Picture 1 (tube, one colour):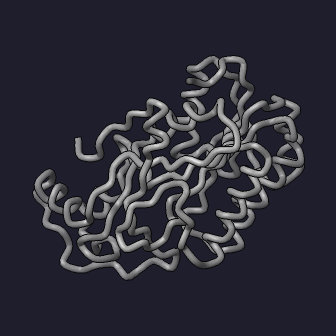
Picture 2 (cartoon, helix red, strand yellow):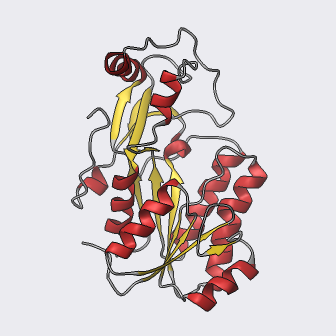
Length: 260
């Protein structure tokens, strides 16, 4: 299973994941247009703005739209504009295109370390989680796909390693808290792999390990001891669950291990 080469693709959000995804689509032979309000892109603008989408349609009418925007934190209002309002705008102005929405495993919330699948009801609370779930439902109801992504890393970017080398406080939670990461190239490969499907939800997690194991490995690799302090819990809450990607693995997805 792979992306069809005749696809006309929009990549909405040309950041860390969007750049890699756009190149992967081009490598498959697809025509690609990128949209972003800040990062260099074919169309500079906010994707929930009708004017931005009209400009984009003049350049390329999409058959497939990847929504991989990011708020990098943000308020509930920013979440709503970035995710839900963008999805609704795309559905209005690109009615013939399939939408693949990049969500987050954060919607599972704290499950006490229990295993969760795509069938597990999300437990995260708050307005941000509610916005993500509403955007997911809007996409699925129109035959699109949802990918719940773990934290991304790459060869030149790993927030966990950066924090460790900078001596910043450890991530929130107990040492037994489960962490999830996926390489940005593996995340892009997963999105291309599922693109021929319809109305489906997938977890995209490459590696799962305890917080204690993460800092032990970082200490051994870098020679830098872990910080003695622990950061307070985020306003967005934290995932503590063993998020299964078995559904995606069954399609042939093969992510690289985080500690490699």
